[in-house]
Image (cartoon, rainbow, N blue to C red; front, side, top):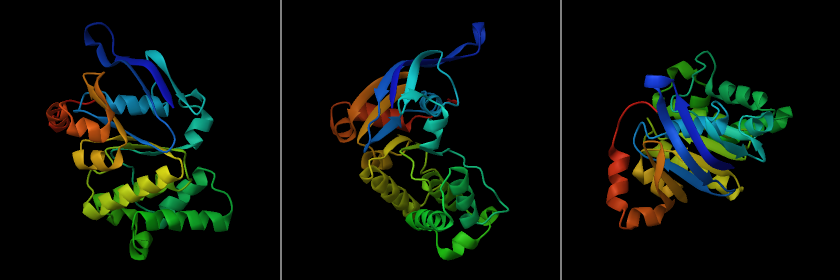
Length: 242
């Protein structure tokens, strides 16, 4: 995917807010690109533009050769929002099975295999898979959301603060899923405040502040270079909504 000069303005006149001020980036198969920065920096707005949930005020986002949000791009994308919706009346297994059907995973046997593979990958036990989702802890719900996003083998995974609410075991499951996805030439766009997760998962990173890219490059180089204190400081900040 490729973003060229994307800007996003909300509101009009005195209430106008520039969430993004013209940023450019590319994401390639087999890599994880991190979106880092404080709250209010534009990370969530960027994700919504990539998903096609918002349209840019200026610039363009191309996903799989066409505009973001088109039908084919949605079919090839898996998304884990910061707060995943829970279908409380369903079990964990039924939830992932529903997403598999919605995403067009064909064949009963194949669909069952994909569901169980996804649930195993995020380490939800057979007992947890049979539980109603309403009984899940926040961490279990996050792992279930990751399984549901991955079950149809998307080419692009978009994750918004995926480690929020996860315990160390859940974080390890996430990292294994991302590594497996990249080995299959999948791409990952990952928004996070977690410096450890960013260091381990991301190959490259964009650091946003006030709607602009203030740093970018290889993740390990960013954290070991002269700008490392500035990066760590930015990742620790909190602010308003994005």
